[in-house]
Length: 474
Image (tube, helix red, strand yellow):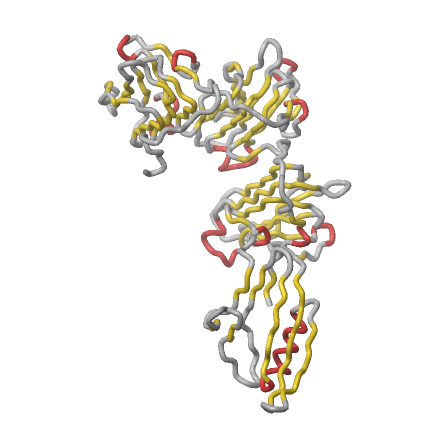
């Protein structure tokens, strides 16, 4: 209910990935022996983000004899301590959410026993670092082999993952987060730390945090000024199977495709043809005609499965506040997930993503969260216009009536996974007009004109075979 799994549903664990509270470094030791295990959601020092709703979710796989409880600790508007009622933990999913407030505060979840075992744990959507995600494939990549990282000048922190820069403007003020699922650590381990600029432009370096096998995540709170935020890593030998910054997956992680569902840009109707041959393939995110919605952030995400020889690039085109054209820098597409987000503005504008090659193939594509239509595969069949009538065994369909000497503009859709043969009968008074339309819009069409002497009627029979997996509109 409300996104929280029912506690009575037990998630079966078929591996040994469960961990006990006492063995999980995400918990601190409390002073009260009755509530000795503390999971911190936020502190007043985090400012505005501490005012937001605070949530933990845990999938419990084992409880100690006699059970175990959890309760909420939080500070109030006047700085006093508040302790919530004890809530019994159950096998399966357990979740508590503490409502948002209008003041800075501390929120912690206190547990009565360290012998509780769980297979998943998250606080405010961030997975616990002590849960190791098993990887059964060879998709892991090392920091040194990932193009998302830059090389730093400090040999002790030589691998830099940029979350935002002051040049990004308002979006740089938002919370900045990275999440990495580590599959291998070098001998001696590795650390990560935060670099950020302050309100007066000075440099700030956070404390070193040891990376652990499994999910690692750091979130840098939102501020009221433009700033730069980067995550610095002490070793390039860290290997990981997933990496995202602000919810955008790293381009160096290749998503394996086990089917033949990839499509090329040139074969995807979501793209328009541009006038500039160097950027001939255009994916429109919004136009000024869309009004207020065009002012919002505009994003595309594409999972690339094949690149042409020499690679391919994408760039942003957008209109500015005074209506001028702006073209962003070319960005090289990589195998795997590629994403670009154009920040929100305060005026109506057009935003398009321009591609240098139509030979790029992809298995997924979305613009502002909407999937591309060219990757849609409906059920095989025949889709006549509204108002059509089928006979009793669906072998014959009568289309909505059309008048003589007028255009018939209804659409008829066919989709077949292998082959489909269709016979179309058109009576004399409509034959010449409609058959010409079919000839223009259907491939592999044969029109045979037959005269029925007995009935005194002439009609056309249109035959064609469909050898494609793509949806076509007549």
